[in-house]
Amino acid sequence: MVKQREGTPIGNEAISFIQNEWNSYNANMESVGRPPKKSSKIPVRTWDVPSLFNTIHQLDVGIEPEGKDPTGMGISEIRRFADEHEITRAVIETCKDQICKLPGKWQLIPRYGQTIEEVRVANESDTRITSLNKFFKRPDKEHTTKQWLRILLEEILVSDTVIIWKQEDILDRVYSLPIIDTALIKRCVSESGQTPSADLEYPDNIAYQQVIKGRVNKEFTTDEMIYYVRNPRAWAFYGSSPVEQIILTLATGMRRMAMQLAHYTDGNVPAMFLRAPKEWSKDQIAEFQLYWNVLMSGDFGELSKGWMIPGDIEPIFPQKETLKDEFDEWIARVVCYAYSVSPNAFIKNLNRATSEQAREQADEEGLQTRKSIVCEIMNLIQEKWWGYEDIEYVLLEPRQEDSLKQTEQDNINIRNGSKSVDEIRRMRGDAPIGAPNRFFTTNGWLAMTEGDIDKMDVFQQRILTDPDKLKESNSSENTIPVSSE
Image (tube, rainbow, N blue to C red; front, side, top):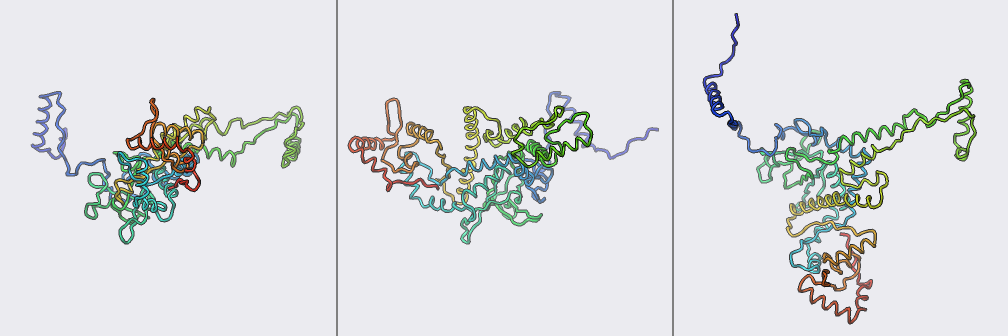
């Protein structure tokens, strides 16, 4: 006897729903069907936020509450790779050096129609610029501008994130801008998957929490802290640094370095064997070994001489393989490419043209990008906590170390009108001579504005009537030094 299946009947309503769906499908075989009805009241989310994201304490920001990030690594592990892999650490320090050697300053955003002289006078007389330049000499009241920028770049290049906290004085003014360790800050999300706004009521306005030893130490809103991510992604709450992007290559490189180190510390293969004649006994071999060691140990003068040995003794060199090959260069190329730095220092010599082209391309792709990131962060700080809309931070281009190349560049800038003669003279530390801004065309020199036409006529008249005054204007007492700010 067949036993009937037991269970709870699905009900007449469910049967009716299934029958209607089946009838609709049979009526139109090409139908795509109807989408399921909304099952929850949760608003639209920008990404799939894990459950209880705000409740679970993240001891390491790189690890998601439910499952790890794509690399499966936290901030501490990423930093370990950046510190212990020598090539990566050297490249990171090079990136920081490239930015820190550039002079930076706050300046007014030039308005249309302003002359170069008017912009210069406005910048020198604006007290807000003076105040900003003074504050950013020591942004966190501990480190200089260059040191503070190195800390900022270290966080950006390794963890892809920099966190800047606004420390206020008793009058609620900006007192200092310390950079907080990224691994200590946990981000919070709203129901939409975004960073909570500071305009909400507590605790819904909490955007960041500092978690130390598993306990919440401090809470912050977006008005109190800047959480800058260099490489944000729509499907994740954290960025992706170059270290994370080449993590497998770095792991391979570190094991390669460990193998090379073991060759000099734990290796048991000597540099050379001497094949003794077949008729020699064990005692004769030991006697010759002792004799050879006495001759070849310690005295470098004797080692440089030629020595006679029995004719049947043949040297064998077991270490024929080299400790550095194309694989090491490939690892260096990958690291340099990730940071857009020229790999010339780690690879075999190239011809000069190819080497210079590779360096210029790396500078264009990497240095310019890092410059824009630093300027963006500085301008974000100023706009958020000072609120000046007509002031910007700029990193100036360094002057060429080759005087001939710099002269050629200055000549090009003058001819195309991007810089005036007086601007070039100020950059060199010379006094201005009153030359108007102009550019070169096929018909000769033309003034930039109508006001400069009169200046050009006066300047040309000075050259014709009294050229000695131009020499006097370049005297040492009138020299205007270039400011490092």
